[in-house]
Picture 1 (cartoon, rainbow, N blue to C red):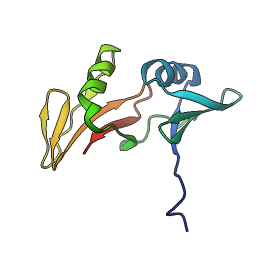
Picture 2 (picture 1 turned 90 degrees about the horizontal axis):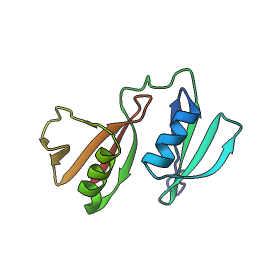
Picture 3 (picture 1 turned 180 degrees about the vertical axis):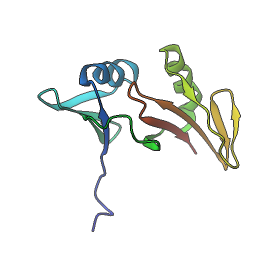
Length: 125
């Protein structure tokens, strides 16, 4: 029923203006729609990301968004770090941390947070 349909991630933020700066200037996402200061829809690859204002922003303690970045992971992590984005380091079974990238299971993963504490990651397989 839904297997051939695109899914869209939704990320709650407290301040849409702060989020707009982060998602557009820091991450380089392109806005494609908005709803009066409450929602911004971003193009990211062939998908969309909804960023919306909510009083519950930052309460999710799990990864909210994943980007599959292939062999560009090191380059993207360096670029994010240069823009002031701190990497998150986690103790994950089977993964070892090399700099800001977790390596293991034939993949590389890097985590970071947006200004509201929403957890995001980059994955290379």
